[in-house]
Image (tube, rainbow over all chains, first blue to last red; front, side, top):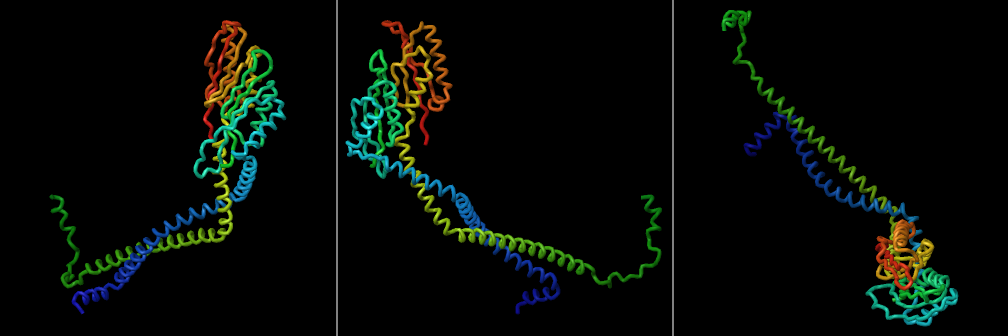
Length: 184
Length: 200
């Protein structure tokens, strides 16, 4: 046994209380350092798990609203899909406006389906451009316009001009550029 | 100094000092042992307290992690089902946004024409209503003297600006032209209504 060790043992025997305290300090210090490292790691885990848990709680609380929103969106999309036109089906595309012409009693002049712009990649919809002119009394033309806007097909009026057909009288002419929502 | 020398006999012991000071045990080691024990005890207490606090926070963290993990586990089936619902909503929303981009009309045309017709002054004859490039144009004629026509038009434009149906649609409503028609003496005017940008 070396001299220094013997000296240390002698000191330990002489100061048993201090020795015990030093051992406690050593054990507690090591334990604290080890647990502090563990705690730092656990804090990261806790933050992640808490955030995930909060998302779970929020999602579950909002589940009735989510379900009703999903149903609403699905039914709206079904309705929209039913109203889509096909660019190639010219007869049906024109026929829609002839039906409105009959209903409104306005007289349709020109009706042209123009060349559609190229499809965007991954696009689920496209638009088919049309141009048309309608003549009739103000109420007939207005009726036609209203039916086009609120009818079963989804149509955007890109531009229009409504003017008097003659300087006097009730007759008006409406020229419109339309975009109909279509399958890609 | 004078006082010290005068009272010095009072400070001296009243009896002979018989202590053998050199033979008495030294009290320094006892003081040192006590101080060392006190210091060691204090540091041990601090170390124990700190270790205790660390163990406490470790257990709290463990408990909290277990709570959130348990919450996730118990709701995992419902969450998987809701995740599908969310996916449906997200893809639906993307499709609706695309539809909106294609067909959302910045101007409800029939409402606009109806509102223009409803609010026009009785002597204002609307010749043309036009809409292109995010702006609507009303071209009309007025059978009035230029002064009265000017006053009446200013009032009409002000009314259009405050109209509750038109105000939300247009960012700017202004009279952009006023000319006298030499043939029939009417005043031809143009009112321009600039649309606000459409947001989904």
